[in-house]
Length: 220
Image 1 (cartoon, helix red, strand yellow):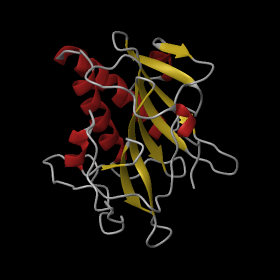
Image 2: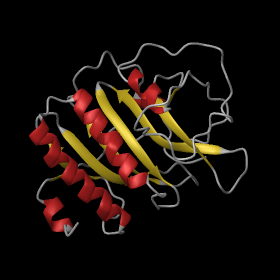
Image 3: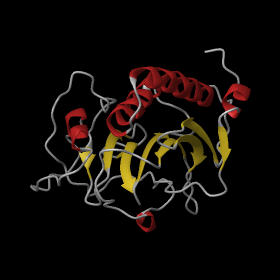
Image 4: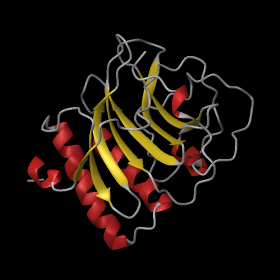
């Protein structure tokens, strides 16, 4: 789309500290939950069911349980993740998407491998974000169409390298206090970037199952 960063800046809100930046973690002992095939699978970029260890347990009740039908896996901390294979190392995999509730805020991230969106990740990211917006905000169809165009433009600009990683959050929905940011994810020598939406006034969510203190920032 022929959208400049200036058009995005009209909706910006500079944030000194962006809350609840999640981590990208190389999965080692993540339990596998029952998975189902959905018509439009959000997590179908080389899914890794055969690599995930089976815990033999059941997933806990969650406002995001519908993501199980999209091949997401629920972690013990209550977050939902989409794993993909690491093409550089056999039998290894990493987090592509992560959805979680932190202190009442809905946080969803799409993690970039080496600062680059993988094939199809841009459209999958947009589909994930819009699914969450439809399920957890009071937006109507007209609002969602505008939000979708906005987020599509933002992701496109990130893909083109026109939005550098920063702590600047861009407001895409006033009523739900929804922001999108392209930020660095760093912990010591661990580095990465992610596109994250942060909905501070979500709907249809219970009490927050996780706290910000449990998260690292980086890739392992």
